[in-house]
Length: 411
Ligand code: KG4
Ligand code: ZN
Image (cartoon, rainbow, N blue to C red; front, side, top):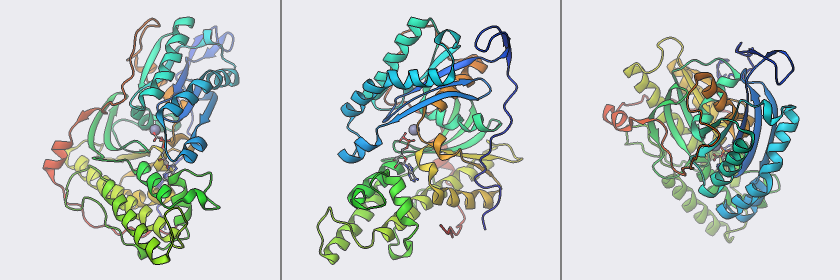
């Protein structure tokens, strides 16, 4: 039985940050309004939020279908699709909110990190928009936005530990403020979502009748429910490295070798579905979950040893596309239960990329009064952008041994 405090996701009362004004909703109480724009990868997202975190309007165009068919994200294709959809997506979010550009307090847009060609489209559109409407511009770090989303849903105070896991990232950090992070560990090669996507492709899961419209991660999670992970005991990566970094490439190699062996045994070619896809999916998902759980466990112990989190009721926030995986959430819940930490995961809709999280980050900046630029500013995008102050060497030097915790998870 999982502890009831695991995976707490609830809509708490909105924060009382209202101002008096005579715009937006007529004369009376209203709050500052932010348009958020996201194009860092393969989702074109936009949303309008007020500063209490209420979503007034949103729109999202996902390119998932296209990239699934082509076997991965082709940057020029992603760029073209962002180009085709951004104006409509932003207009839709604005129309649904009933807010006019004149009423906006600022426009917040992802400018780092991400695919250069994708970031470029969102940034170009946003700069034209703010220049045209004479609005302040707030450049957003995509990973900061993932980390802060939870604060839109409930009042989580700084500092808290955050695990961000997506198709492009795997990192552990302490969030000390809106733009104040300590990086404890990150992936040395690929991200868990990327690994799951590649394993799913190698297994040709698009040909599986239940998985034809699912992302790799979703397909693995779906099939794993009917699988027996003990059939393929993959090694958990980096067992001898006592730090909080991640590595998934070696695990993917283990899985690929197993798939090749099974193809030979079953006498089928690459591209056909193996009879044991469920078991391979379950074993892969478990190895990913165990790796994430182990590194997160060490991060919690490190934070406790260094006093980086509140002694009373410390919190772990998990976000990013892979955080929507229920099995991984349960693995993390076992660790947080064992260490006396609250686990908070935003609902799946807010874990994957969207315009809401960018608008919310804009709201946080606006409240703090930092990182707000004039409409005529010249800003560049940054495909690579570290998150916060890197203290991974300190974590490595501490070499904390993590006690073994049994991850007994029922789907
Ligand atoms: O955060 P996100 O929308 O985009 C990036 O910034 O990468 O995450 C997308 C990633 C993909 O790799 C996808 O396979 C993975 O998240 N993902 C999942 C699940 N849903 C999406 N991975 C595991 N289980 C899921 N249910
Ligand atoms: Zn993301």
